Image 1 (tube, rainbow, N blue to C red):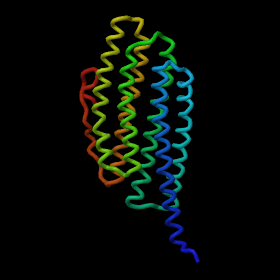
Image 2 (image 1 turned 30 degrees about the vertical axis):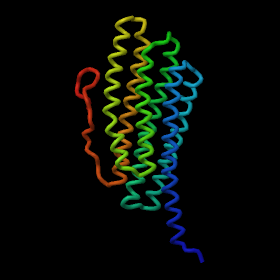
Image 3 (image 1 turned 120 degrees about the horizontal axis):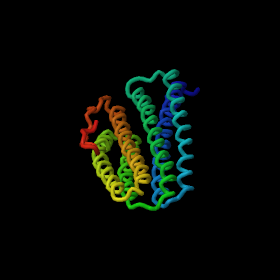
Image 4 (image 1 turned 90 degrees about the vertical axis):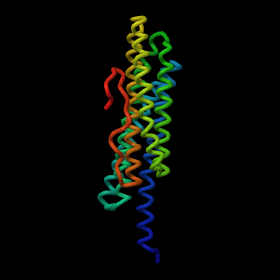
Length: 236
């Protein structure tokens, strides 16, 4: 006769693994949207911009599926200790990934507008910003999949690097605007894209903090390393 307790344990474990797999898939899609949005900007590819915008719907669907499964597990399984932390953290991480995909989608939308104007050298700065943000996202997803608390802390500490790059890019775009007022519209849209990327970095740090909590049961200090913002004010 089959061991019913063993079957229940396997089923429970499978549900936990399925939620983790959905989060990882969601993160991969969010990274792809960001990559496509920046590539579309650089290559002036309207079709790729549209593809990135439409892909956001798949991220939203995964977010809804994760929420459904989390609620179901909380109601039926009544998890405790590390399992409860894992399930709640997965829900919070999914929410951050949904916002990351939204920011990337917004970049793709603005790329459609920018690419109707003459090319600008300022797009190179966007590429540098997105490279750091993508690396943060990829690393924090690895930390989540590998249950790596130390890796999560390293990702969190990189947010300051992205802030510094953003502040420098802000000033660069202002220079382009002052040199030629015909650059104002395109440079303004580029600044919005840059801000979206900077916010992606913030969401990556949120994910990192949730990964750390999931593994250790402890919260990282809320005082993240921050420099001055682009207006010379202390960033919060």
